[in-house]
Image: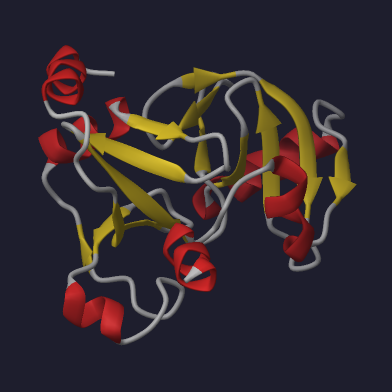
Length: 177
């Protein structure tokens, strides 16, 4: 976490959380979702505006965390901005040297491979559970063919519960009300 973020949290400890304004899609791209986009429906149907600013994306990546309930968020100074997830909290990019990198830039170690009923490939890593980027499925198939990865079947509807993440913190908040 950035030092400036830690200082802001200490200075303003009671800033309300923010829900629905930030989303992460299945390709590892961040989206801003203003009130008008949120009014159109859930993130899965109305993503919003794709973030293009590299420094902002890097700031989000450095300050991307999860709370005890499995809700992923971006710590924006003193405010937690909870993230709407399209499918998983991580998107994995397979590198030419055989390593695996998170959409946030960290290098991770793959521990287990999964395939869902639609053929999407997922990895459980030392950082957590996520989707292999669609452009890297061919490389993932090579890893399976060579025996590097032995995929286990997983049902899409079971992933969030099994790996402890919340797809829509905003939806969970509305259900509590």
